[in-house]
Length: 496
Length: 131
Image (cartoon, rainbow over all chains, first blue to last red; front, side, top):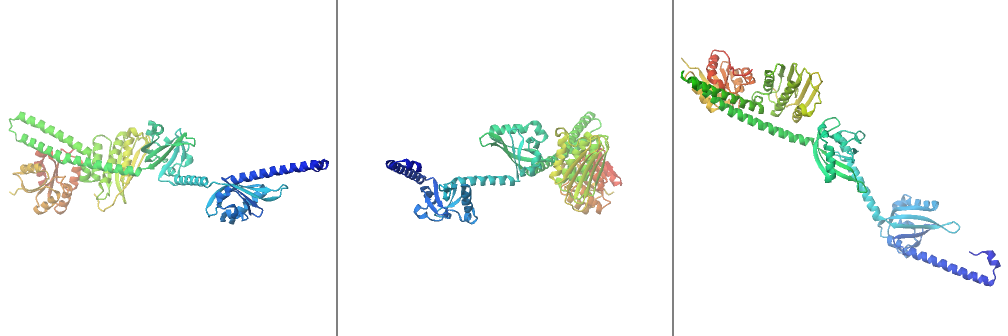
């Protein structure tokens, strides 16, 4: 810079030198300005745009031309608002950008801009305030890159993440949850809550084997499953699980591995479907097939074998009756044959009865139950009060069979656990049949070990449920036990 | 002297044959049928003194036949001849109006006394029935 004191002390030659020096300095300045200009022009990845205080475009580099499509000659002097979207102009965002740059020196510039052809691109950069030497605003410089692709990729990612989140939150047909490496539930989605009845805060952090039955817990299936998932990269399983209220559901699920962003295994994702109804249908048809087949074999045994044996017995008895008085030895032999035939006949009849009680079809539910009570009492001193009244004339075989089998199992329990007088009662209550079996104790725990008699209770419950009925068992240790079964039945007037 | 008239309802041919043999010459077997519905018809058309009924009969069980027949002909004697030796069957048979109940395997010993009892207005319960 020129300094007066230097100027005053310098001679004419010094002045000339000084002028040369200034000229050279100016030249260098012009050179560096030109260099800067060339640099700015050659930057093609960035749009560099200069604007005056009236927002008119005063500078336009090659990058701006490439990104926005306008040539420098056609855009210089035009309003800077040309490159903003109508929405940003309308809602004041453009003004805000300029205001912010004016007040603070720079403004973030992350928004959609408009190209010459009307298409849009995501411009990312800054708008900077330009001052002269004395700090007066002379215009603005806008520098930005076209980051449309990155922006779109980010948007897609965010959108797909949002979709996934919505999907997961809204899937209620499937129970989705995550398990950490230690087997604790780490995330619990609404579908899982709906399926199992646990709220997120109740179950998160608990071991996922909480959902398993006691038996499966003891067997360590939960741990085995995670181990298999690790080695095989994912597993499928299906088994009975337990809801919060203790009821059971039959579930089928897949376990997949979950990895964190660095690719480390961080847990397991479980997608589980409640298939209790399908299982029940399957079991129902299985049980029906089984009962039908048993009935067929029982009939075959009774109607054919037992009849033929009876004929044989009659024949033998007649020969023995008609033997001459002196044929004592033959008579003894015949008696022995008769007795053997009789025992054979008894065995076949018992087998037939065990397979399926023909009394159920031949005589109806009341007679069949009464016969059960007879059998029970004939083999022990325990007495059962029997009452059966007001039953509809026709009860569907499936329901009659279910009630018969439940009563059979219940009496077996009475025989095992009770010593006092018992009651077996079947009544009709509107469109319901009620079967009650109670005893005077001493009873057993109502939550028995399934491996010791509990299966009987499960099977009674299952049989009741399969025909749309409800089963309940109340028992106090040392007290009485009552089994109560209520089954809806199509009512036709008339009775036994 | 008129022989007592008997209708046999039994679906097992061998047993039909044995019964016929055993009832000759003391009884007049007027019809032998093999199912429940025919038994009701024969009972109505023949109006026998005794209806010998099996329990497990096609179409209509012997128990149902007895109920029907006894409604119209309360005087007709009904004797069950059956392979069922369970008390439930015997109980239902008598509830349906039976006059006698004989278990097939004990036929030789029990048939004659059961028919005699029935003809004299008494009832006969097979001692072979358990309980």
